[in-house]
Length: 220
Image (cartoon, rainbow, N blue to C red):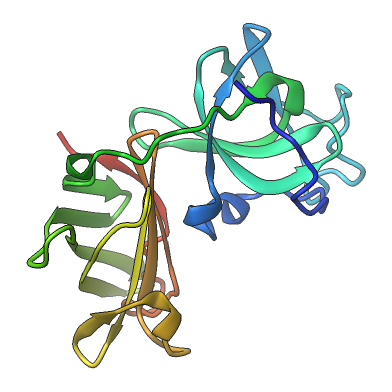
């Protein structure tokens, strides 16, 4: 296993959910090593000057040896930005000591691991085999309650995965590569990491307050 390095990431001392979910393709699968328990540390948004290896920066939340992590490119000296996702889809994001995290190379997931029904909060994603050989058919629906109204959203597309990622945009009723998305297109990126589906969207796939961004757990 290889320890997490820092050279390729920006030192911004800020680690939020957005750092992990904003670019699913950049997520590295990680694992907790070393001590039995490793605490998350706050970033500079919560406590100026953090993260530092001090009690003042240390959070109550922690992970244990063997826990699987979702590691973002953001870093600070001696720390990596990561999320831990539990079996119910709840998650914690923050800085973890770099020496407590390793990122072993991960082979692409088997095609059938994409298939199934996934859920994150009010959002659902269903993935099945697409019409074209090697493609996935991906459909989603969600809703958001705002004041006295309920806004809804949905998407549908077909695209072949590349490694552990797939992305597309809706355009004129068809699925196109995400690079062809227009400013207000419904566009989504997906990554399958540790058998969790990580999704990021542009915010144009439904009414106000409807987003598909999140960690999705396979529905049983």
